[in-house]
Length: 590
Ligand code: DGT
Ligand code: CA
Ligand code: CA
Ligand code: ZN
Image (cartoon, rainbow, N blue to C red):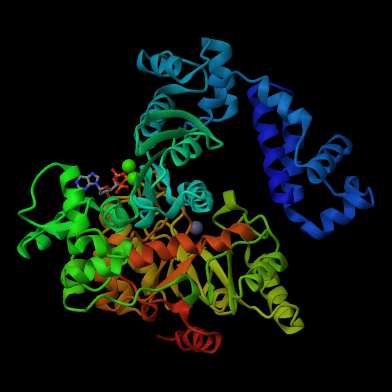
């Protein structure tokens, strides 16, 4: 296990002990141990363990050192397994309710005998929670809202999580000897920010072994449907998946149909009809060819539809250039494809670096050197470090002194040439409630760039929030705005803001708006980007990485950028190092 994975286990132990009502000192020891671990590097951890010197680290005592050593060596911890098993499942489930921590859950359990979400809902509804010491009306309302959100959001999943489950399944399907072709379709293939269920399309003649393999996948909790050529399962995470198996000559039609979106499909079908053709999941046949699905499949074999090898040929048969799945939302892609005016969408390989990333200096979990090494491993030409500013005390925001110390460290790191990746000095500077920035100009002037973000007072009226953002945009030191609406997918809505006005102000002031690529954010939403970029807005795709693995999440941002019709020309971090240096240096005094 890596140090961050071990830290996760320690933090969870702390939470579970708190849930059990254990001694607060013991709880705090695990929390402190988790933080202490994050501050050291993986290499150093391995050395400390080998030399049995883990206890020399401040915050790590004998008991913790043993557990860390066990996790580091085996990836498991018996103590942790036993602890998890000793907790009532209903209590653990309550931890998923936003705003409800272990201490409160413990109190609800001890004083009201609440042991699951159903009982909690009842106690909130009849006011017993509000009457408890340390709770009150407001907390009760918040808990109820959290429960409702959990139900509403529980049905969808983040693209990133869905992809992690889907990718090995596609790879596994392709390895089966019966399978000729296999793809994930649906919203996952379209790169939607959240995914309702997975849709797999497989070309195979011998169906039964494929269905058998699919329904017996590891992690399958329940087979919800099983037929001759399809099956549906539900995984332990709650995510569901549909599998459809078709003969190879129908694969392209099934893939196109089940990729969707529904709106795109409706428009494609209308287009086919206007050309005397009927397009369906079965094939592309003369429109007169009515009848049952099976008859259509027969007709298809004789018709030219049966000969289409891939989607490019399918689109061509309707007079269209290939439409990338991300654009298939029925938002003008067919018209553009007809005119040959589809943009050349940005690709993952176009990215040369990113600007909004954190280190252990604020709330990141890897050091500056670890982040630089990870960026180098990705082949990035540059990495921007933008740790939190002083007002974000909950995220350990940097004071002026600590920021300037970090700047010096980064300059030294660059001068040392230890990494081929150049590191830019930045800050994720809080936008204060009135729109001022959290640091003085003199401090900001020492940095290569400034990401300005809202991190508090989310409840302002739309007009106030819009003015707050515009004031930050008008600040001469602001390079880009971070996560413009502050939404957290499946968790909380963004704050109320007039995006159109903010975009116009950004263009007028030559300020970038970031496409925050964290799978939880994907903010600014893809639905705004096409129009904004046409008007001249420059984008930066930033992972907002809080650990080395987070850098790769730019992949989720690329999905959204593509859905927003973005080309590499409108994204700053597709440019090489010299061009970016020039851009950043010429921006001052705008
Ligand atoms: P999701 O799962 O809610 O994230 O979204 P999708 O797009 O994956 O939707 P899903 O799984 O219900 O169906 C996959 C695709 O199948 C969908 O994008 C388009 C196609 N499809 C499903 N039902 C219909 C329908 O009633 N009409 C049309 N035209 N297409 C449909
Ligand atoms: Ca789906
Ligand atoms: Ca589906
Ligand atoms: Zn932020």
